[in-house]
Length: 168
Image (tube, rainbow, N blue to C red; front, side):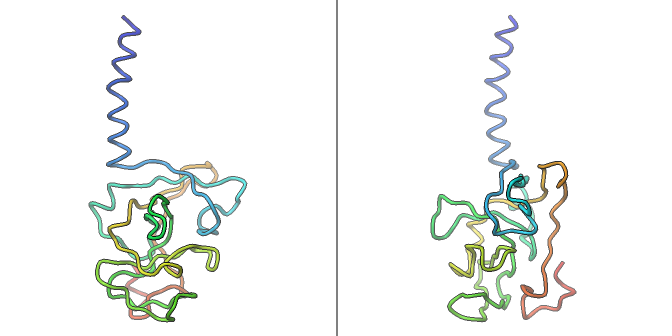
């Protein structure tokens, strides 16, 4: 009888777990250096972050948030980047085909924190907000790095048409 209960528990638990991961969120390992120093400051001990899928359906995307996005160049690849600009924002680019750009409607401008070491909007341009898959809301591993990831922008990547007070 005990084996039967375990099997039933597994058969019920697996679909619930899959639904949770698909709808609410999951933990993922951050790979690479593009978000240094915010994420993976020590490459030997990579960060693991909670990716909140529910947040992208219930909240507006804000400047300064760290999000995951399907790569516009390689759709199977998920990138983790910071939102620099939203529709209508004027952003200064770093190596894109033009130096200053207005983010089109339904798009955002994303960059890695480690300028020059990131495949981001400076490589492929503005990203459709429909490609955003989740918000990174906290670092969950290693324990020494436990923290919430609050939105933030530096002076170097702040939209040119906004006052710094409204960064949010």
